[in-house]
Amino acid sequence: MMVSGNRVNRIERLAIGAARARGACLYATALASVSEVSRQNLCRPRRRLGDAKMVLCDHDDNTMRANCPARVVRILLCVSPTSRYLRSKIVSQFQSRVIADRETPDVHIARMVELITGSLASQVIRTFAEMSIADLIAAHPLSAADITEATGSDLGAMKRLLRAGVALGLVTVDKDDVFAGTPLSKTLQQDMPGSLKGWATIMGSPGAWLPWGNFVEAIRTGQRQTLATLGKEYFDYLAQAPAEAEAFMIGMGGISDVISDKAADMIDTTSTAAAADIGGASGAFLYALMARNDKLEGIVFERPNVVAAAEAAAQKAGLGRRVHVVAGNFLEAVPEADLYLLKWILHDWNDSDCIKILSNCRRSMRPGGRVIALELQLGEIDDPGLSSLMDLNMLVVLNGRERSAHEYRDLFAASGLRMTRVTPLRAPLGPWSLLESEAV
Image (cartoon, rainbow, N blue to C red; front, side, top):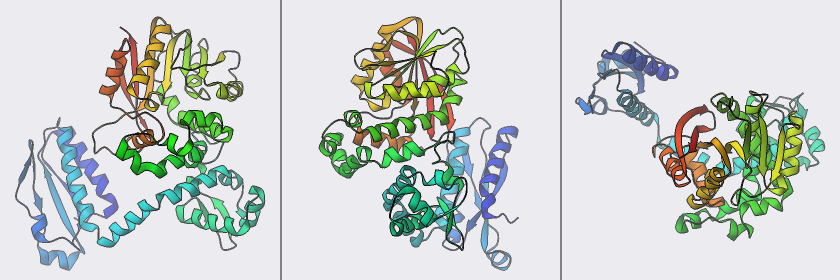
């Protein structure tokens, strides 16, 4: 049986699904390259992985050489239908071996170069976002001269930027040197739901970018690098950098657009009179709840320099009469409410400050009130996703960290709250979780 490489993952999924459904031993066939693999590497003795056994078999070498350029490998999965962890480990080990077998030293070099130059790509993306190039070419393709004129930039430099944009998949170019957008560049359009334009801008702007130049020092000392590079704490810096502050708010709003609807579907507000979005930026998370409950009153609690933009966002959402924007510092106090929303707030702060924030919510909470945090969640150390990189960003730029559900449970307990529910959310930005708590 010959199986094309792009069907390997599909076959693995089918195999696991069949095992789960029937609880029987089965063969899952997948493709492995023979360019760098010897028969001895594949034909290994049966090995145990918990209660699982894996047998690798191959066809006769002469038959393979005559009929196909690649080796057909069979994995025999002898796993209990409830052993999801073991099944995933078997498939993961097999897939890693197949990938490693196909790779050559040149592949590793190319991959490392891609990683090393990732910082350059980030600045290209940031410039596309800040100059609104994706918005300019959304309606119809434009020449480099047209884009240069619209952005007030240098023609020669713009051509070089657009060339890099083509290489990164941000734009395409035709034979007449006219540039058009791509599905990737649409994520940088201002009016697209879940736009990443603001986040791309803020992540590449000086406030978030310069501290990373001292990353080695952050690892050596365990200390954030904002004071050394910006001369002040990050949020104090934003208060004096209005363009970056606006990009930060837009960026947080874009992330909220991606996950807020999913989160709001899982939160019951039928008995809630007032919800306070603590550090809510534009209030997108709060507005998602208010759209589902027309009796819910809302409070956006933000720093004084954000109030005007938050009020404008409430008016734009048509919720100006139901939303009150209040200025303050959540490390000192928060307004009275039935429900407190903390979206991507706690990860900005160390444990003692998190306890201050949560304790302030507990102190101001009405009887029967709740606190719901929406955070990226750290899993196992080898879990893929955004959490590990954002954890380092918290180390370098702020005074916080990403945490596991268990660590958040401890913070809630230290603040007079009991975590009652942890709900994972599937989202493209990573392993988010809703962490719901009530007063002890």
